Image (cartoon, rainbow over all chains, first blue to last red; front, side, top):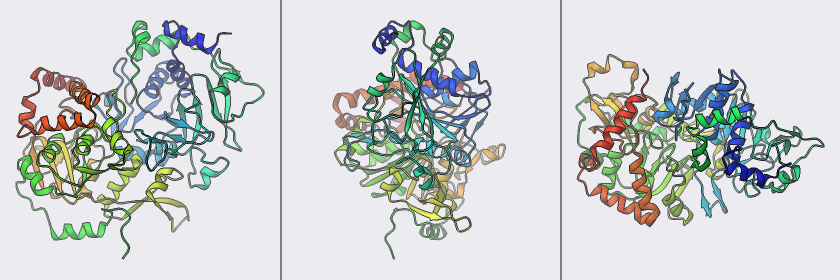
Length: 275
Length: 322
């Protein structure tokens, strides 16, 4: 069995998927045909584009700028949810507020979020590090994330798996997961949705039904339970048996790089752009 | 009488002001300098139209920077580097938004970070829908709207948002307070001389902002006959009776984008970010100094290489539905 380090070295040589590519492809496999997805820039859009071309041609993609049912053009994926490139092929353009009100109405099956920090109950921080009154680092903030995780029917979180991100308690709850666990989310008045899956470069995780604690559900190929536990700065629920996820196929990888506008060469040296 | 927790949330006062001070159907065209002189004051809460780098009223904001104002609060759903120009020059003391970043892969907003982390500017963080509902309630003339937004999160707690119980079901929801900004600056694709305005593409929150605001200055890529608006009246989303001033300003959102007219100029973003990376907030101040050394936006535009502008226009045309 190869180790994570070996895997990363192979990825650097352009032969194997990079960690961000593994996450994107894992996320794309979660998307079912016919559903409605509230997407964001970067990995969520690439995952959506990949799913639409492989197994979910009737996935409707929504962006917070007001775009409904957009085309995802290879090499032309937008840099912002609020720009002309993001509106190409839209079936409908509406207001930004209307998009979130449709989320609140319950039309959107999936939301997708990235995180700066996530905790054991799926609470997400994208606002600040340190003391909230006087943060040591001021981050971009929620954007649509607070509304997405509060209102979409389920929310998929995609992030690198590192101890500094997987913390016992986030410094600031920008976007509510299951709060303190158990029924806390419902008791706070959030009757719908919540984080369903956490997709990382090491694993696929969900939340135990009773306690709403984060639980290991699948390992990326070549990764051990011990490696996942070591990369998580809180106690994960680890079942007796954990499946290994299907490896990324050459076809998935080639198609994803095509959608990203990358050749294998540029993927090797590629600048990762994220908003 | 209690002190209002959220300034600008008094819809009764905003309505009484509107009843006293109608906006008659006259020719409202004026230069940006006159519009800003008349309608933007020290201490104002300014709603900035568009979002991130889309349809930002850059020409009007540039004129505010040129004239100089103090103690401004800037409200915008998603904020780009335009807010940093006001923070770095000390003109804005407060930013109200759901997100600040530069976009185009540039990442975090460095100047804003510096000022927030050192406590020199007040940063009020709302959810995206929270900002939208503040404008929506202001536009509707009601003091709040109920929503699931920010429930259970530290955003709602930090803002001291109140909850409201539904009188029919008993369900508890957050009560998002209205906002009637002192003035809104909005850039549109076309308007007539009375201020009836059409927005192409994504409207974002601008129709609500226009209705909510106590004063409204629009800049427009072109001025058209009222009869030509009548050919596609459903696209007219800002009524002239909400408008105080109409500023004809081609390229009025540059270096940000204007749907159907031009894309954002990544080269201009690079120039700004290079200045900020080299000298921090001093870089932003130097950017403003260079900007305001031009007497107006047309003069600033004349300093941009024409071939760059032609490409931005051609690329925007290429992305239109066909």
